[in-house]
Length: 119
Length: 293
Image (cartoon, rainbow over all chains, first blue to last red):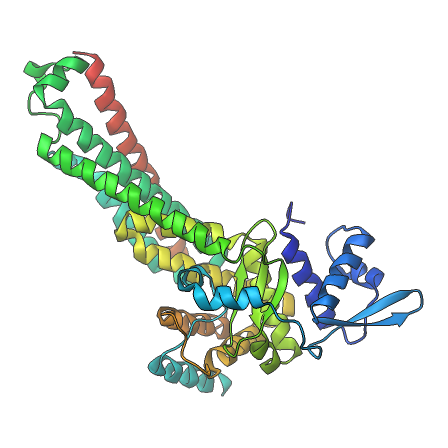
């Protein structure tokens, strides 16, 4: 794997794994699917964090918990983040957003391209 | 002013521009690396040139010439720039440094306001937003309203895209390019290409992870066409064209780099590397000169 990775990137990778799987996964099953060599406890910790954030739900499976991706528990709210987002225009401008907003003309172009490629 | 001094900067800048033309056909990862090299070398050449003009201008002031031991008889008025030109060059160089530094400070400060992000953070906002926050911990911010409008596969594509930004440290390329562009505004078109190609790079990584370029393309189009329930408070609409380009690239067949593209890029690299070396050589020559009065 690529050297030292950002911690957050690990959380993402595990969430990706949960989203790909149809069944709930135990920490050791998640560990099997990761391409990185990690400690069992690390995976457990990350799964616990995802659960706390409401991004995963868990159920007892034998002696361990099994985790599945979830969007149902909508009670997690990062107030600090929302404030950062709303107050700091400069900060947002430096972020690489997944997609940038389109103006009306660009929306029309994209729709046309979408139609063209679909046919 | 000695016109010969301007040869490297013109050659390096022109070939960097030529590189941009060839980039559409290039793998995004390679495009980012090449553009970064072009930007770095152009900045070096510009800085060295300005430094040399300033030094040349200074050396024509009799007092300075005497102090550094420059032969006024042999080289009077032959140093490449008059004191006025030297002064202007010095001012331009100072302004460039200040602009670059201010930009770097601003970008750092902006990122620090997201400093607590670790892993995936869901925010409660009705805007459909998602972005990666770089840093030693790093993470991704996604709005709940966006997640709820995506199905499982589309969420996976979105996550894989943002994850690619973090894993491949895209913010370092983007930040470097934008600091150079802040210092030397001529580099702005190249810097915005760096931003585009880091997005393309992340798209291709995501496509590999989810096993479908079409899925990533569809996700981009879907998110881009979601109605924002309120207009964004900040002007980010500039990036709209990039969305179309990314969609287009993902839905077009991938082609290999043609021979002519390879030749063009090879030539570009030769020109900018030798241009930079020539520029540094000129400065070294100039400095060496002053020792041999």
